[in-house]
Length: 406
Image (tube, rainbow, N blue to C red):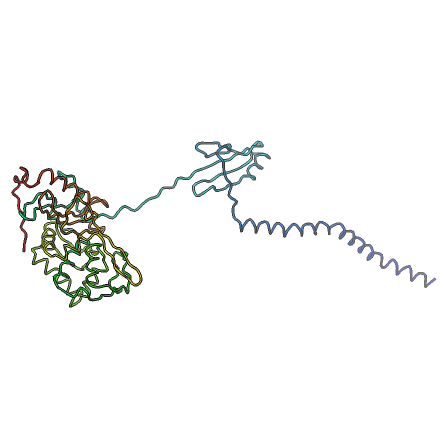
């Protein structure tokens, strides 16, 4: 008896533990499949979200045949409060069909509604930089020939008769017309034309940052550089000519100003030999004196009216052309010429040409438009041929004269 009682008491003692284990096993069998399914879905959802983030929004092409409501492609949808309306709002998608188009796609009453909105782009361009002549109001001056140049002067080189003038005393930047003085002084100095000159970093334009085909290290003769400066208005060539002048660049600039005073150019000032600086300034009256002096130099006449020229640079041959297309025109007989342009000066042109039997000096400054200086010269030529040809009554009716120094 005692032994039987002890055994029964021991079995009842472990009965709660058995019940707890049984309940735990049942719970595990019930919950384990759900947990495994959730574990499998979580990585998939994470991968899908990462893929969407990497790819970005998927572009959707919106066809014009789609249902588009609202004024000019914009649709205002008022969703009703309720089950269907809330589902439509949750299903709404916004896509971009380019830089200017935004489309909204959503479901409504079982139909797909596409709202397209176009965004207008307004481009604001900086206004063009005005020339000194424009800022001074010179372009408002009217003339009988309706020239685009705000300054113009046409005189007979032999009789000094003024045929046409417009703001001829105005002092303005002259751009590369400066090179006519540079070329004249180099020619008159009679320096060795075959002396080799190398383009250095000092010759690079740091003011206007203009380009050049004469790279640093290019070596050409003085004669070649003079040809390029007068014919093609090569800035580095002109600067190298002034830099290598006996005494250096400062001496050369001082001689430029001294020569201007000697010619009677009272309104003229030079600060460098290329014309890139707007501080190089003159008037049409002064430039007519310079053209007259340049015409007397055979080298300047020949090189400034050359239509094209080739130079050897290393293993290459570079082709250069004139900046004045009138040089190649059969309608013109040009003795000397020079063009110029910087934004402060506008389009400029000076020439000595024979028109209707008369040797004329023409000056055009601050012309508006890329080809307007050429058009002004053509207009003056036709006008002179019609009204101021040698022997015509109109030619003898003018008595205004122009004083030429030298």
